[in-house]
Image (cartoon, rainbow, N blue to C red):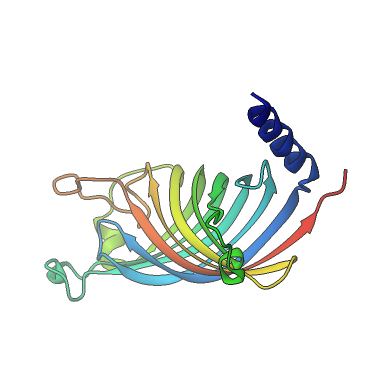
Amino acid sequence: MFLLVFVEIHVSAQDLNYIPRIYIEAGAGINLSYCDVGGGSPGPSVRAAFLYDLSPEWRLGVNVGFHHLRGTDRGTANEARMYAYSSNLNEISATGMYVFKFKLYPVKKWKLRLEPRIRAGLGVIQFQPRPNEVLASASRDTYLPVAPVFSGGVGLAFTFDREMALLLEAGSNLTTSDFLEGYTNHNFSESRDMFHSILLKFVYFVPVGW
């Protein structure tokens, strides 16, 4: 009984001594889009996030991003169609993150600098497709250029000191729209449009005083 009480007091004291932080993330990388034209064509992505500590492991915040998607039928089974497009995506979402803390003993200094994490988010994207002339003439559908987006990913951060870190992050983004390129094939489209991203981010964090 005494041991249980001691553990509870010790944990509570650790929680009281913990100082939450605000995290500012910004970085760039590439995306791979999977729509009804092309597939896996690379394009640039830029993202920034503002996060707050709910606990040493849990963080909650807002994510904003810009993604330039590209696709072409060249080199695919549909090369004869000659469809091609580019599309600009603006994104805003709420995101939650869980950070894994190393608790192995003895604790090594390099382990304390590493922070594996997983994240998930829900938001909205606004897209501006620019089909080539052939694809534009084949597009007959009307659509709303706004759609919900579900995102998830994993990352690994390396902290340099108490204020800065470098983060490598990979994730997937599933939308509820089939028109990110301004076109859908009603006969062969089996899923909604999606894109993956790989980003390198700089992270700056500031303690929040009480």
